Amino acid sequence: MEYVQNFIPLKGHLFLSALIAAFPILFFFWALAIKKMAAHLASLGTLVIALLISVIVYRMPAVLPVMSASQGIVYGILPIAWIIINSVFLYKLTVKTGQFDVIRNSVVSITEDRRLQALLIAFSFGAFLEGCAGFGAPVAITAALLVGLGFNPLYAAGICLLANTAPVAFGAIGSPVIAMAGPTGVSALEISKMIGRQLPLISMFIPLYLIIVMAGFKKAMEVLPALIVSGLSFALTQFFASNFLGPELPDVLSALVSLVVLAVFLKFWKPKDIFYFEHEEAATALETPHVSNTGGQIAKAWSPFIVLTVLITIWGIPQIKLALTGQYAGANPVLKALNPIGGAASFSGNVPFLNNHIINGAHTPIAAMYKLDLLGTAGTAIFIAAIVTKFLLKISWKAWFAAFFETLKELKFPILTILFIVGFAYVMNASGMITTLALALAKTAALFPFFSPVLGWLGVFITGSDTSSNVLFGTLQQVSAQSVGMNPLLAIAANSSGGVTGKMISPQSIAVACAATGLIGREAQLLRFTVKHSLFLLFIICLLTFLQSNILSWMVP
Image 1 (cartoon, helix red, strand yellow):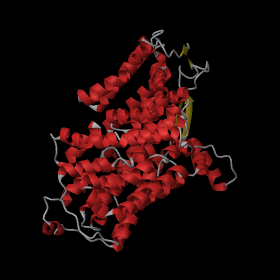
Image 2 (cartoon, helix red, strand yellow):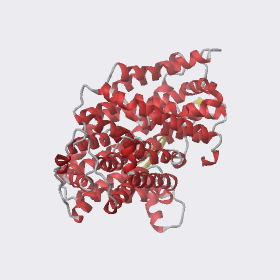
Image 3 (cartoon, one colour):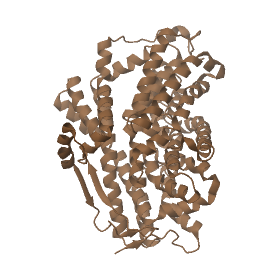
Image 4 (tube, rainbow, N blue to C red):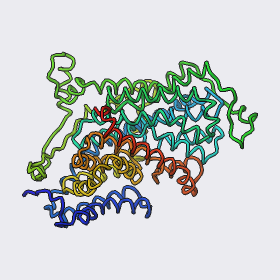
């Protein structure tokens, strides 16, 4: 039982074939953005429609797309879902023990200036939360915090959504990049390197843009030294971490570096005038209570994330990663000892009825395997950090397990959404639907590098997740780029970089921000606030990608 991929099922009608291939995506957009269907139900419907089209239009034997979906769902469980579950779990432990309040106080007690508070909380602290947890937590927490400090709720929500642009591509310990590595077959490190040669340019600009939006150009110039310190320290760290450490740590390290560097800088430099919003009285603002914590208390509160950073760094070392997956062939005795343990925790097996049963356009059978590397995934490093945190913060095992199962309960629908979306992406890929869309998109020819990031932007707008967008469109970008002579790695990275600009207008993000700031029912108003900034930043990414594909090709690794 074999299936030879047919990229134009309606002979001689490429664009009609592409329209049919795009139908599951259009349904997902309609169900989520217009019908306001629950994300897990919309994604399930999308998967079912893709299965039907693959059988009815593309004439695949039914067992093939079903097994392909199962392959995607397994990949969605490990490593993607495992990373997300443990990221949120670790964050929840700090909240449950009250240490998160200490972390918050250590940030907000540094300055009274609203502009600098926005930099510390919305930009740096939000990026840190995005790197560790993602999935709405950064915007919800930072927006609520700013409102508590006296920010106008609409501005607090809008500013936090805008600030969240910089870290999204490497959120939840690199989940978006790791997710795209699977269906595209491109190394996560290579994707990370390319994103790290695009996004830092935006990250460096975001602090300035953020304060201009918040207070105007003149007021932004008054704190220009702080903006340079914040943006430059973040961008440089993001570049080096993404290019030399991989996709797991750029957010966490960039956020910590920019947070610490700016905090130290503010010990020696203060703006001439303290900025407050027009609706505030300076005297009232100065009465904002702050809790002072000792250095030991602050170090204890941050210790779970320090442990996380150390473990993720260790897990990212290539030789250790090989040992943890049972593939190490060197002479190091410690790694050799880890190798059999890693091999026991790693499982690979052919996907029944699917492996080598699909023939691609090059007339080559496509291998299909279930791959589960439990010990080698970054999610396990985070889980170990959570175990260490139990002892550092002196949490009882009962409370520890209660927090873990509470996390599972809270994330059940987001996890289902991811599983269905990844399964859908694998069906699109196996059937050839993605290639059909790519052939139609390739008709843009020389302009494709400019429009490439738009796909990522659209995907994040629809799904609310750079991870889901990368899974949806990663292979499409790859195939389209190859057909027009663009570097496929650049197109894959552009999908993620373009996607970060769609996060601030995603219905899910808007809903989270409104809920956190008491703006329920004013979602349309917040969307109007963010949409122009989303389009402006998207244009910058599109222009940069076009230049990197032509004039600045030396920037591509």
